[in-house]
Length: 142
Image (cartoon, helix red, strand yellow):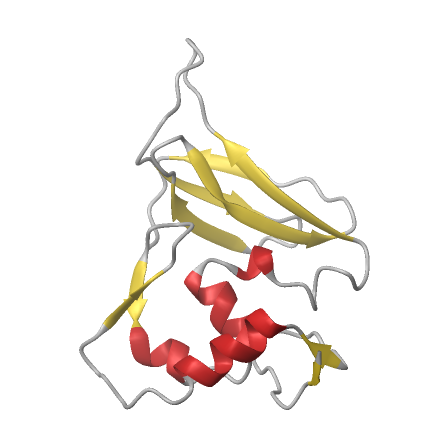
């Protein structure tokens, strides 16, 4: 692992080293030219957002998180007691509930919005230590 040269203004974590996923993600996306009309996709939630937001992030981990694949990061996973939670939404007959808007509420009150995938799965939600998360169906991002 290489020494971390990126600083995050997006979250409160600090790390001595970074994994290849974070390093490569940063090296690719930080060098893109400005593209004010381009959209990026979060692979887990299915949400689109301005691509320039990714390009301006200060770390590869923040970029991977925005793009929906930070769960594969090795440099953040090993530090601390983190839990990686993903929910699968099913109807009363046990069938998957695809393409459904939902909101996840953390104990702190923070809200995350998303759309279930084709198998009714939500994005992964990472918490420090065990925490109870609430999932509300049918809520759209305001």
